[in-house]
Image 1: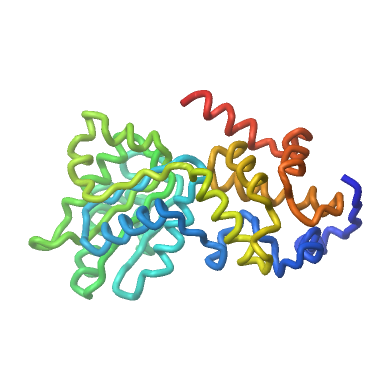
Image 2: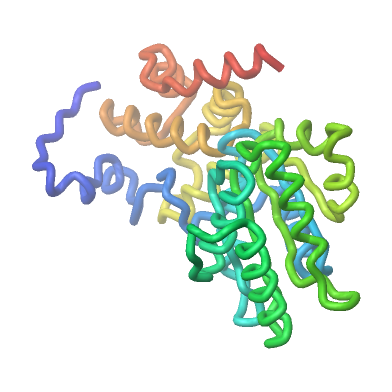
Length: 296
């Protein structure tokens, strides 16, 4: 790489690097979620439809799974943006712990104040009272668990029991479980068959195919103010192969490839530029993706 940039630490967040060179308003491939850069592949649209259907149909449990970086959290963020005042949402990420601790996670996510010193029965009663009050006020309660594969089978069964709380024939709480592929295996275990029977909507996100990767790259380039052709089709095909179609890895490799092109005064990212990034070993995630592919 030829160009050297000197910067102060306080300016690091404002560095344009290749932005002026390519005429971008902002970096097209940052990892920070941004609704303006949200790319909907065909399967992401289907996954979102399943999530939305699960909520609107009052499904007791909705399940969405997919590999790391496939866009599950992005879907969740978009879903949360659509909720109005008629829905009370609790979002829980990486919840862990045994009986009693999980219900504290739930109460905390819903903004219910509680005394952690009281017993499980009292905590459960407090949650039940809250759910009934929300129902009486015309509000549905949706509890979303992100990274739900970290829950123990005992915790998943405890969550299933929450769906038994109802008001007559109406559900007063809905669960959305989002996690990595092993969550599906956990749910399909015979010991959790009662939980599986309550899942009314489910979707598994797969990595993007080569066509969708090219569409994602072009879309994000245009969203940043570019033409969409700054990365060639041949380079996009190579990026698909190196990342195995995982959106998060695609963003990382594209960002680095644009940096390499800028550093050598290339006005397009072609296959040679992408190969240079891979040969230099700066895209460490490629090695991780390759190892995961071997284990499949």
